[in-house]
Image (cartoon, rainbow, N blue to C red; front, side, top):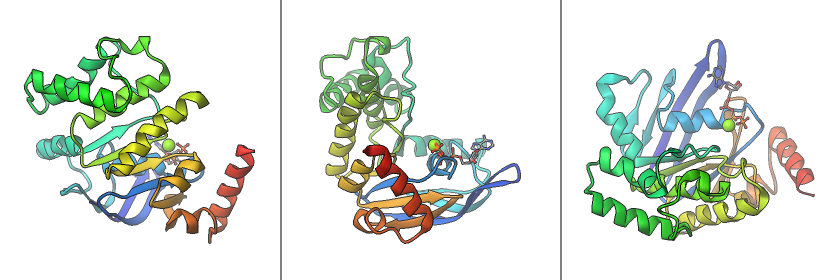
Length: 249
Ligand SMILES: Nc1ncnc2c1ncn2[C@@H]1O[C@H](COP(=O)(O)OP(=O)(O)OP(=O)(O)O)[C@@H](O)[C@H]1O
Ligand SMILES: [Mg+2]
């Protein structure tokens, strides 16, 4: 479903991603962890082509991405955005639109979905994230956890083949984290292909099929949680997980 081949990216003279190569099969859930500044967000943003890159190639949901794609590839990039959903730390809902309008906007405008169909699908998605009764609410009337669940429903409304999450719970109070992580977990169980940047080790160990430790622009470790989290091979992973365990107690 995702194939990253020798991906490199620079910001000025700083290498932010260095020769990253990785494969993700359909239905896998990858937890991406690692120290701040390692390149986790940049990798996700390249996968959705929110940022271009300098070298290598990405194949995601049947679409091939190369450096320097622009207006000539606009329709490919539009297609990419419907196949790859992204949820950020900040929910980025449209403040002036109701929950239902937030969710139905892209399907109606980008995919020309008939309004009644879009609304029906949006209501199903709201049920799925536990907010079936909040379609008429505006974002400011919802808690952070509820807003993030709307953001997830909005991404799912495009019927993506892949979902990318960049620290979806780190702006939330602890009690709201569980409800959002519950939705992410349901998606994983339902077979969605997902990459989730998170510092929640419980999630990484319970839900992920694989864990990537990203540091210094490379994937330092890649393997099942039992291997990467419980018996890390590299110093950077040992140090990171050690710090995370101390934080939890
Ligand atoms: N627009 C930019 N201009 C210059 N440097 C950038 C830019 N965006 C990111 N960087 C640099 O790229 C590196 C990787 O950043 P990135 O945001 O991908 O890290 P991260 O692993 O997501 O970190 P965090 O855990 O703090 O979110 C950092 O050194 C950062 O300073
Ligand atoms: Mg980040």
